[in-house]
Image (cartoon, rainbow, N blue to C red; front, side, top):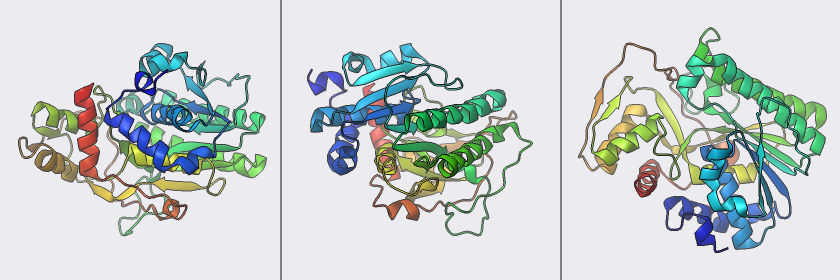
Length: 356
């Protein structure tokens, strides 16, 4: 079947997929004739990974078998559509908190499954922890049994908590304070425990697992229904509505465009030191939340909207205030370099949202 009929031709998402396949061909070739399992495959990062491998098959004849591990088959059918009729994509439907009973070979694993919304973290902290910890243990057990060649665990910059504010750059070694009595801490502390599990399996069972600590990741392909801050800002620009901040907006954010993140994950699947963590961040996109809001209002919406602050009385579940500028030096030493800055990130994401 023609590639144009399988993927959304002409979209920014398709342009990103083609860029990764062409510009990171050497990294993709390392997965030739292998089986790759992606957990959380209908999530933002997961679906982009799946589609990258599938497009690589069609453009470069790589012969990669992709196993999309999901829990919601209907969502997978909407997301992958005609791709589900192709022989190189297989669905594994199951609960990540239960042991994974997959019968085939698994050469590489990208573990992206996780709770991602602050509202769920606040309302269901026990479930959030369970998905993180039991899910990751089950993935690592699968990798051990299948003698997997490479595993990438997707962690988060939230593992840093509140680091030393005097640090010019925060490297992988400089973790800060996390309030264990806060229900919202189920997410960062869960991620820390999962990283510890990865390091333990690497040490005891010699599993080739690398940890990707993702900065806030967004761009083309984000759902128009996404309710995270960056998507809210994008919708405000599209609808010509003022951006409303529910905090003072002084917390410092670290960001990375989805295309650059996918390239980093492909690299970490076969490169890097086992059991170690790597920040995936575009250091040039570091800014306060309110600075990002002003950039969208002034440069993306060309001054047609404004930014204002309205702080609600109830807890919205946002991550605590943090002053942190992540360092991406460790990953850059492996040869990775981010390409897309903040303004272009928003322009590409908005173009895709409008085209939906």
